[in-house]
Length: 191
Image (cartoon, rainbow, N blue to C red; front, side, top):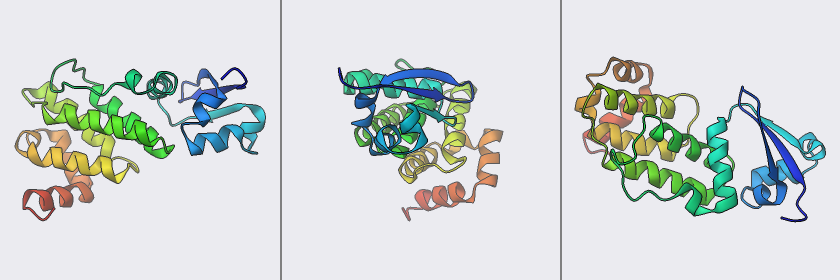
């Protein structure tokens, strides 16, 4: 790290800047390694812009990059222990980031954390149902990794009765044939 050159990332539409040690980041991700050390303009300018990445997600990635598994932490609890409304979407965003940039260990940890939290998370009121629906919307908008979507189909299939009472969930089902078909296949035992 002592010989590592500083590299600047500009993150998200807010254009938040992060300075990192290039060696720390490039050793974790083959994609970011090419970006940082390759012949692209980013490597030459020692600066990259990642407009679609959320600054909080990038901060979580940096904690992992500098401190390892302990920074992200494999959560032992789940359910409402330490629950915040954005926790699920944060785990999902971190998984999507890690998957996209080829950071396999971080992807495994974040997907495990999400699954562990969902396994014990009860939909007890409108607020918790709304939080689950926000996560489902995030996972089925745009292009998300198939492994994440499968995890969410498993969850939504188990919680279908509670979710179906939520208008935003019904709207998501109506507008996303992939989710609808996957849930039906799961519920009737074809998957």
